[in-house]
Length: 147
Length: 142
Image (tube, rainbow over all chains, first blue to last red; front, side, top):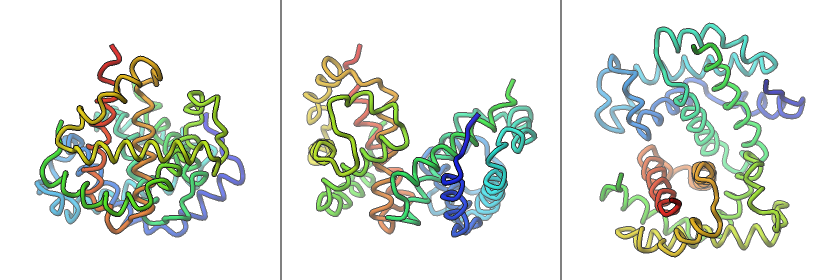
């Protein structure tokens, strides 16, 4: 199980406090669908995903991205119990959504890249390392109930 | 997988900016690699890996220079990296999983230095380019 020191938790929450969850969520999900187009397989009902601008401007992508990142925010409030926090979502992603857990890693890394572009110098190697730990922990938690 | 004309142009135009800070970017990408993925340090027992070390700066510069060579011959990356491909296959034998880790850290570094240029399309182009480079560097492994 992943363990965060007090310093790591502080680094996460202080950065997260400056993130606009709605914008970042849309950006993260949009970039996932642009950079890794095969991930579009899960979003047939989202309408126009035919170009970069269509994807990044798609209102369903933005709204779903916000949902995903809000859930990420819940993880940040429960860093000591990621598996418990994501148990139900894990079951949903396996049983109903049929999402390959590999996709959680892809999205996590896209999120890290977005944070880097928003925060620049502030997103130091050490800060990145903590966030890599977090996105890996979230990915593991989301895959935990798969069977 | 190969780069479209548009992707090539994105890389060529961004390379102009990146190359002016090539050494710093290479060094930082390596620092990020070792901080986030400590297991990668096992390939450098002979290096001083403290941030800012001469070893890191020299090696970071070398890595980005090689990317520059690939970009200067962007229509024939295989040819440009042939010698490096042999080096990685027969001498260095870095496990292929690590190319993804370094590629990710290079993307993070470029994104943090050039946020305005690192659009979704640029992100795609660079991700693809680094995938292609990684493929070429591991293609002689077996």
